[in-house]
Image 1: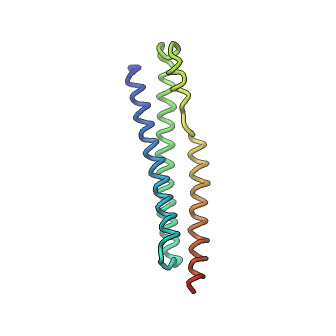
Image 2: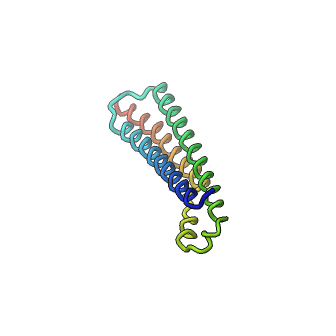
Amino acid sequence: MEFDKLIDIVFKIDDTINFLWNLYIGVGVVLLGWLFRAQIKWQLSKRITVSLAYIIIAFMNASALLDNYSLKTITLEELRQKPEFSQSPFLQAFAKNTGVGEIGVISIHLVAGLGILIMLWFYTRRKEKDHE
């Protein structure tokens, strides 16, 4: 593949990765905002439904992020094989910009996801008891 095309592909993959991270953070912030501000009763069925919906969204988001980080790794590896790569300090620095990678995606999703689910279950139970 042509050198310029590979660079464009990396930028497009980065745009997708940024969108997916923004989406994940947005969903988490909206869920937490709703959790703390909503004046509703959190029955067990509502907690289970919201938890499952969040888990599905987080899983799909993590899967898409992992796919895109994998594509980025493969594209950067192909870029490193081009003769122009070794002659450019910019390109060498550019190729080091790999983001959090697969381990980061899994770690962040596990920690943030568990944190949100714990808050969902414990905060809503406490809130429910306060209203009794």
